[in-house]
Length: 197
Image (cartoon, rainbow, N blue to C red; front, side, top):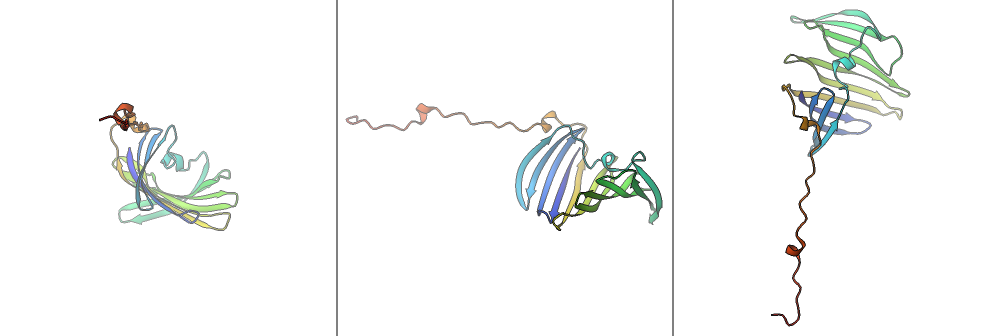
């Protein structure tokens, strides 16, 4: 698949970036397109890494969490089922609430809390259907840092495409082609010889 995403960070460090990504299984090509309003072209190849926003990597399972039904919400003809979740053991990333789409029964909103020593915060990740796939659309997190700073991050995904395949060259860095060395005789500066015509 390929997609665009934009990321905005405020607090600990401030930045705004736009990326275009190609993924195939565990391989990823991440092209940075814009940084703080300035066009750039930077390519990063990541090999053999699980996609951190894949629903399988985020959604809680009954092997690790306890669930409690917390009600349903009607939005026109659409039903959303809400569940509270509690990890069986302490975790630095813990899902505490999940909203399920009433048609697919897949999570459309995952709310989480994070804690790591003196750092703590919360956020949410939203999913939706694009074509026949259930993909991440939006993520937001706010974190209280050890130095008292409140940091925010917002990531938004768009322009999903699902080609049948991607060429293997997609996941290789482009080769740098050096210009040939100039011919020394052709570029030599003529030397004046005394008495020569």
